[in-house]
Image (cartoon, rainbow, N blue to C red; front, side):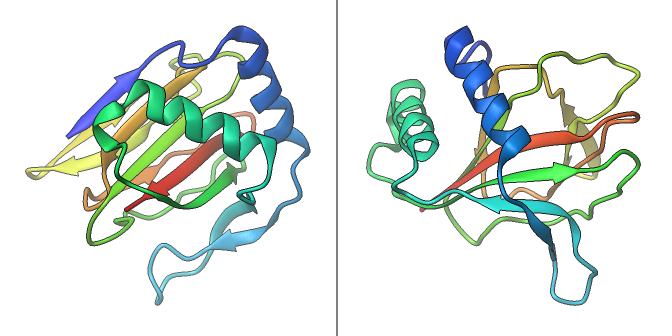
Length: 158
């Protein structure tokens, strides 16, 4: 199950989220699986942060079917051009939300989120101001942009 909402935020909030992603404090990557090396950079978003509150309220507005779920983690992933993250699942239950804050996208840049479903790869394009919801048990991975950093705001719910 993958659901997509385009133009999820107002233009002002979209640009505010992009600005946050560009200036957030990052630490070196995360392991998609214990035996694999870390990839990318990560910036945790505390539940008291204005970004956390803005994104959490938008998720509830756009996806009322998950109102009984609770957010247990919110963070920003940052991948450098040419990085190659690994396929992984986000949990044994729950939902993951991805928000793409970039200003533009070009098909030759790449950057899609790939899902492995029934032996086939299906991609979701990282269109600016797009919010995606999917089952946390779906096998997926990020792909990097060709020539610039790729930011994705990730939210995990149970």
